Amino acid sequence: MIRAIFLDLDGTLLHPETHAIPPEALAALLRAREANVRLAVATGRNRADTRFLDRQMSFDAYVTINGQYCLEGETVVFRRPIPRSDMEIVYRLLQTQQMACGFSHADGVFCNRIDEWVLRVYRTANMPLPPVLPLEAILGREIYQVQPYVPVGGAKVLLDAVPGLESARWSPDFVDVYPRGGGKRGGLAAICALWGIPPEEVLAIGDGENDLSMLQYAGVGVAMGNAAPEIQRRADWVTSRVEQGGVARAIRHFLPELFSGDA
Image (cartoon, rainbow, N blue to C red; front, side, top):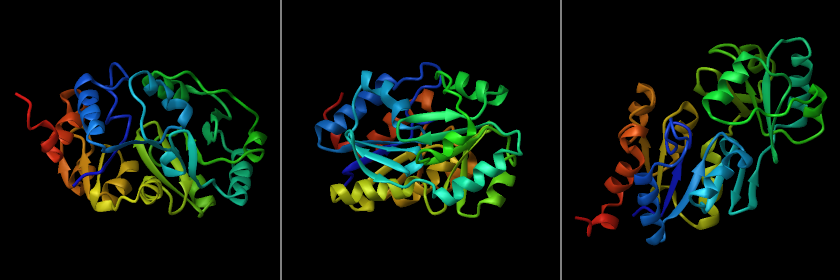
């Protein structure tokens, strides 16, 4: 019995052209909500960068910043910032490296600089560019995730310098870096504990490397048809691509009782 659904956003729930929830996915989610299934977003984005979803529907919970900052409604119920000692190492390293990075905090994200990599990422996601602040700003607040805007392998110098951090990549243009042992799995576990829902009653849907931990935590882990072969191989089931109604198809497949009366 599925009692909760956790959905990645980019490459999963959001259509790549409209950057919105496709009508068939929205209808399936609302049908699940009518049956008292809990609905949650699980994303690498911060909460501020998910507020556009409110125009279509609200969710019961938001697992944001790859599980490092989680909310039930608008109440923070779990947070795991990068330790100050690790951020001090990042600060010293970036003083000598020409590396553009995003820094996710409770209220949003800022960058230390804007380059072509950053421009490409935000243009693709149809999002406004983040503010640029002096590097010293990373020591003045809690940082939950660092996003080096670099090609594959480009963040090795940072990861080698800070063994307390780990990474997951879901875009060729940047990598998410957060506390070792973190990731979406921890966020799902925190929300499910709050709701009293065991993992075996959870459906998780995603497409990226940063989704693997939650797909493996959930009783049913579904990979999108547009996911990399390795993600599909490690999932319990593979649905269609985003633009082919993948989310709606997965919900219909694993909660068929909700649609039994449909023609």
